Image (cartoon, rainbow, N blue to C red; front, side, top):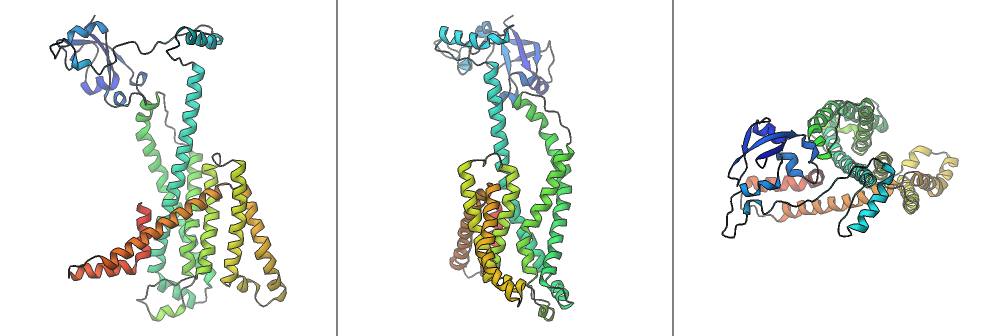
Length: 423
């Protein structure tokens, strides 16, 4: 009958309607009787997002006279945006091997139309799955870097708040490396506890989005808590917090015992430009090893492997040179003349070769280096922006504003890193 209508399940739920009930469609002169309720996933998906969210309905084309004309020409403005012609025809074949032959025959008979076979759909689904995996990998990598900036800020605050404790430990005889190891273990524990809290939270989010995913992808998405990915995420979380916590904890070992005499002085000592530069390069290489698990398939290209090998060799040379300038090699070799002679070939040949070998197997190193350069440029832009605001922003003779601007200038480095995490 022209007054029959079939609606989607989500629309029926929102209307609290069942089969046999009558509903009114906007612009119609009569009510329609619900003759069927179909699964929302049948016609929903990315091609019909509004239908996935709000529902959809079907009526017979003979129901057109039941809609009121709104103009003098007898047209139906209420339906002018609707597709009232046949848009798709589904053909089911008993012989699945004849799919390609039928497809070619349809192309010759109807050259103005297009057809899609089950093989085409399968290929489209594979391409979509590959795209989603790549997008998730890139999002995971970006989240990794942004989360790392937050970890660095957190550990800097921890070290700053505990300079007196570090000074006491140094007074009791702890060496700088032991203090750094102590804070590094604390950073790993923080990552472990954060991972434990993140596992149930991730399961809850997955359970929440399950119903929406089933509608958009037109497939059953059974939610099952997976133990192996959860444990993998926990291990990655510990590794990430340890890597990003290395640079802040390195400064903890530089606190002088004399800080005990100045308990109110919470200024973090500097590790030196050379050692800080070497530590940053080590962090980048360690992160690339983790990122390889995220984007390994994306960077498995021969030309990229070549660039990664060259980049690894350059980074290895820079690390060895920075350690040499920073005096770290001197503290390791001591006054042993043989070791002092051997440090030169190690710096100029051993460490670069090790870096080149690392880059050969970890192609994500190039991506991390480029990303780190971009992040560094953005950090400098934010640093300059904070300096300009703190330096030239008018105070309007407001004392509190003047004090706030001076405080912003005093902590512009930490402010730039905080803004970078927000960006």
